[in-house]
Length: 137
Image 1 (tube, helix red, strand yellow):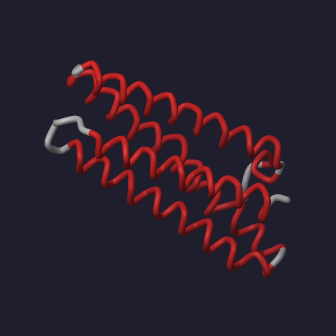
Image 2 (tube, rainbow, N blue to C red):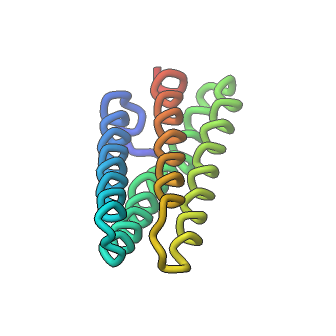
């Protein structure tokens, strides 16, 4: 069973907005570190960025999949296809986070990491819009 705030559009939207704003701030901080040539700080910010996506957005996604989505589809079977699409969004975000981890293996911060963050942000924005306008409308 999902928490009551997940079914309330305003509360749910606030959860998404807060996590997304934090992700954008981390992206900007990482970009500045690259521009300033601060490799160690960039690596530290990159690690925090990955942890952010895992502990905030992807943990939230898991709770949606295990609770909200199942409940909504059970209440309204017409939502099954949408739930599959929303779950696919989560899977894409998980894959991008794994790619971010691979980029960090060489311990050389670079622009590719920014592109991955940008991709995550785009997918997350579209996903959040679909949740609000199609699932919780």
